Image (cartoon, rainbow, N blue to C red; front, top):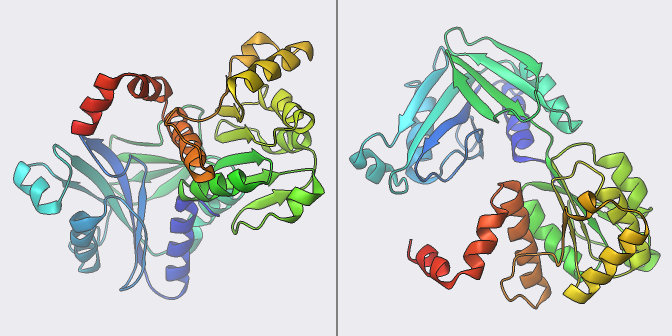
Length: 334
């Protein structure tokens, strides 16, 4: 499954190459509650041609109508802000206190987007800079830990990074549930299982199956912080091999399925294999947020929720709220 950014870029190129033109809309900044984060993209073509999302609902309906009628960004890029007043927020259905700043640009050259498309397909990061005064663009090296999107001095810089990647070790029923959820969360899912019987039954569309050794896969494929790795086989010969490599990788999340007793035994085995304490401290186990899950899809939801929290640097707060009855009550009332 391709990333949402890649789908937007490809759609724009297809529309322009077919003789049309399109618009690229980027979320630059949000205040208060907002449905989509900064850096989100929307491609707008002719009738029936939309890809991506910057808000949904009435905001996008209004924006698309203005773009197609030439009221916005007909010649040069243009900033558009929704939700400045309470009345406007209510009119467009923005969440309470939500304000949305967008940059809209006309796209009539498909080849100008080709380097961005290639970078996304090759899991490379690239920064695209747009001059709002002239409409010219240029590509810059993407610096580590930079904001996904930034507007400064009439220059919009949007980082197109590698698609989020989830490597699942084990091809059983739980893996299927996790893979389906992860694809909906914009992950490219790679499933690795050296056990022939399990690999032969894998059938989730849009995922990639590797029947080799997990440590070889992790060494070859995990080169950045936009990767997560989870082990699910319950077979120490498979899981431990993967974890030794995963815990030394730059992956933002490494998790392992199992009870507390299983986790303690696993940690002891890894210590005996000279895995450093600093690496062991990175392991999320037992995997998943504690939401009382039992069935495979329930467990998958708990794991997906933990991935979301870790990706958004909110894992500690999520666990605290789940453990605190008063916090849970306040969150449900918000």
